[in-house]
Image (cartoon, rainbow, N blue to C red; front, side, top):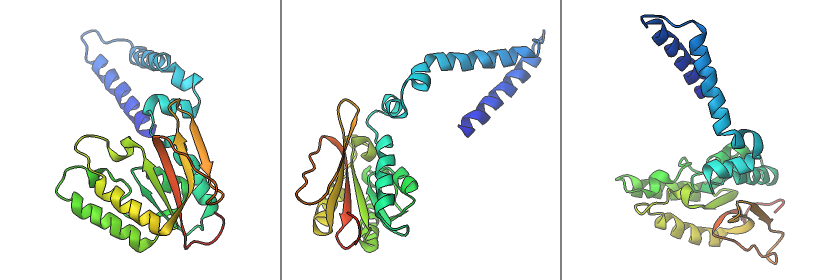
Amino acid sequence: MPAAGLLAAVALQMAAKWFSKLTNPSPPPLPAACFVVAVLWTLFDSGGVFFQLTPVQASRAVYGMNPFPEAVEIARYLSRHSAPDAKIAVIGSEPEIYFYSHRRPATGYIYVYPLVVPQPYAPRMRSEFIQQIEKANPDYVVFVNIPDSWRDNPAADPTTITDWFNDYATKGFDVVGLVNILPSGETDYRWSKGPEDPLPKVAYNLAVLKNRTVRGQP
């Protein structure tokens, strides 16, 4: 929003300069009137998002199945169930979880996009990503099973990371939460109370896993 505000001000200033160079200069209010018309048209065209939809509905309308609303709830859970100095790892491209939870990342790679696309440094970056997480031994891990979080396209190759993670998680972590994004756009939050509490999942989901070495509330 600050950047958009600055760009709008620049546009208004440039319009005023352009009008002032005309053979018959326009009256001073004309650039401002054009700006007001543009703003009103934007509000009319996107009125549903601005005035009718809830924040979650607006996120779905604009960003589809991207887990932006879910990231807030997951971060709230992590902040409540981990120490302030705890480290977490997000396997996917949702760095907002680190921000909302106020927890440090276990790796410097807060996006996996550059790790799975065909580029010469991808294998080394994937290796560093895995090594950093294993060395940090994070208290919690969030696995994002959302295609857009992995830049879903034919050239993307998340196999190395997902194969490693399946083995890594099985050895040292327990699933304590599963966040299902339903086809309707609604979200089903399941927080486990123990091994006997099953966590069914759907195609779009995020799993929250807790390190078995971490004491405290599950």
